[in-house]
Image (cartoon, rainbow, N blue to C red; front, side, top):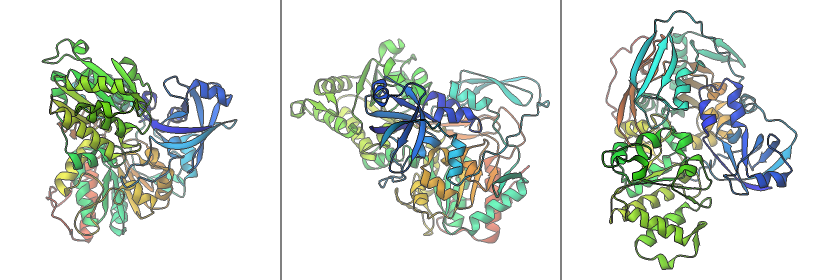
Length: 587
């Protein structure tokens, strides 16, 4: 059976993001959601095994019936199983077709593989052993209030965390995704190196010396990630990239990088989430499912919250969801509009035409949406007191890419001739917006910055991580604050397995499989402080609730930069010096 394959977050997969050494993570990423009638046609039942095949590869998934999908569409959670069948072509944007992949599905008797087995096939190593918490006394009970959550772009700052014995015991006010990150024990305590497929522990000094040597000796080094670390660490990373003439890219290149490209072309009619909370009477989620990706977004900022001028909560607001499937967010919306995959650009154009008074020029349906429904939506937006449009990666990872976002911005511009309307991309990682802030401030560009020419150079599709790895250009890679092993296409991971790769991360990740070296660090927002930027660009200071004695990202990167500079002089643009002459020691 020919199908259109789309991938994305599920809340069950999100709960296991920081438990990737556990089999439960693979169980969730190996699920395959299919329309029940398609299952019937395939002769399959829930729990049977389905083989998804594309031009890139094939992988086995567990069948899960789902009435939310139209016939001919398959949804799979993002993860190693989805990436095993994903091509690495970005069409000049840096983001592959996570939301638009054509393939076939057949029934099979073969069971799914674990995520680690897939990575081993791609050239990686097996999961390293994770030390069991010792349970030694780490202090008496303590309660820390007003803690900011280092999980998603909401950066909820009202958490209450209880710690005892050197571990987090409970988290109040957090969503299930955020609390699981605080409670995770999948942490390393010493650096580990890959010795011909076997893992061994080494000291921090040796690990930092090796990392500096690898980066300094590389001709085309790539520094990727940064969305899961502090703005302060990002600034040091930019200095490293400038010093070695490398490429530094962040996670936005594979998610909302196309949104930034659209904003570069058409501007950004944005506002703070506080303004939405207090004023918005019309809220639209387009290509986004916040209940599973940003679980507290509706209850803190948009729908189920009282505002200064919206003191009756959801009774004072109209919630509209536009998506290709009836997500959990769509099920609680006042109106759900199902759109055909890849039809976003046409729908935005139709809405702009209606607002300009040309509704009679439209066909009976546009992108699968009846003309009357589009006229209703245009009237709702035009008559709003204050409207807020939240765009997801359903726009940026499917056909149209950044042109979808540009057209959405132009629609908001049209609406602002009649009322007040804003647009905000639903940023994923807790500090991915911070990467765009720090990169733009220090280099002039938001992501994919190439220092090999001596001055910053930016060209999505050329200087972005997926494209560099797909073409086999990168000859060394530093991964920090991200997990490309779990989220980049097969071809990229296969190249990572052939070059020196260094991972700096508090948790065991799938990228560890491709690493020659994994340096564990303190987790920003849990056992060290740092600055993060909410999805609306409001900076928030992250608190420290534990002290595990691990070095911070800043300390490790400072040591790496210091050792690199011992052997060469910096060149290129003048990035402001923020470090002391001698880097601080690493404990």
